[in-house]
Image 1 (spheres, rainbow, N blue to C red):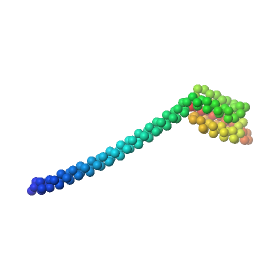
Image 2 (image 1 turned 135 degrees about the vertical axis):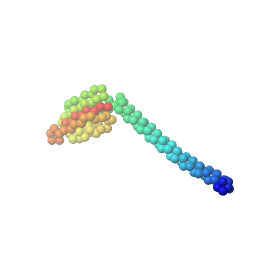
Image 3 (image 1 turned 30 degrees about the vertical axis):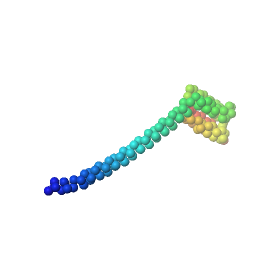
Image 4 (image 1 turned 180 degrees about the vertical axis):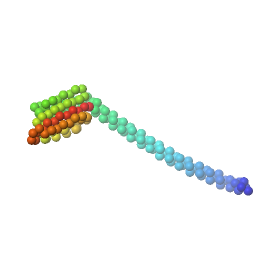
Length: 138
């Protein structure tokens, strides 16, 4: 009896199995498409980060940076510069008797240059006068 029912509904069963296969294949295609888009997005982000790192490396490794560091000596008058020593890719500088505006100008210039500040020490030596020492490398 079961065989007779299966024979009678054979076409409907084939259509049902085909529809189920169609639904599962559509779900698989949709999820695979989402994964591909996610991988594309990830690859684009990685390429953007690599380009950003490449740009920063050019800035930090460029020969112009050594010339830009020399600007820090000319920001304040020469009589206030105690020490300005540049060795390979490291700068050590010391200033005395700086006013508040000179300290501000000097720190702004230092921050604008793409260097790593390893030491920064600003102390008040007298009323409205400051001493400043810093070491940076690139």
